[in-house]
Amino acid sequence: MRMIRVLQIASLGFALAAAGVVVAQEGAELKPANTRVDNLASLQRGARLYFNYCAGCHSLQYLRYSRLAEDLQLSEEQVLKNFAFTGAKIGDLAVSNLPAAKADEWFGKAPPDLSLEARAKGPDWIYNYLKAFYLDESRPSGWNNTVFPNVAMPNVLWELQGVQRAVYAPAKAGEEPRVERLELAAKGALSPMEFDEAARDLTAFLEYVGEPAKLKREAMGVWVVLYLGFFTLLAWLLKHEYWKDVH
Image (cartoon, rainbow, N blue to C red; front, side, top):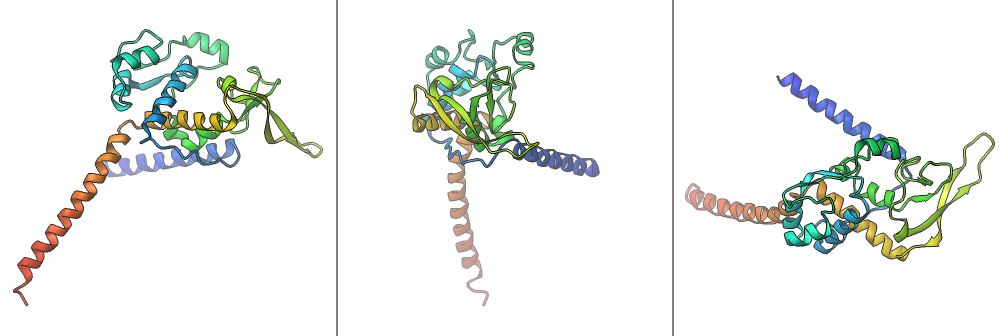
């Protein structure tokens, strides 16, 4: 049994290492997202963005609307009115209504569930990915992405971000052109600074979805550390009292 356990742990380690290599190969250097899952306003804004722009295709199969209401300090009525566009009830999971057959027809494959996306690829990857779309007429969707090249997903946030075009670096003979940078070709509803904040809010929300208990765990952790500090002091005073006459 011990050998089986060791093999399982080793396999998990190799899988995580391989996933890290894949993420590293997909895009260039990632800028830090600087998300904060303890920022309630950011999570609320991120939830609004997710359910308005992402939930039509992507599910959160491990998150219930009731848990969302509790953690984001929203009423059940607010959650159902603003987030549950599928006719779901407060106790239901946040699952998309997109039929799998239609997803295969429209995108070539079903859009992935995003419950664990932040844990699989990290907040920095998501943040940079959301900002890295550009027009590419060679792609079926009309869009490409510098962080995830040849991605099937279109830029669903283009109305907010605007339209970016790629500026290519000079290519040598026999080499494929490489995107050097992205330029804003048409303005969106948000300024670049505002869109950065929107991408950060959406990333923070997906980070929260990956581990909803993190909010309570971190808050409880402070009290645990204080308790351990007090207990250590009490134990030291008790030891000092027991041993003061030994010498």
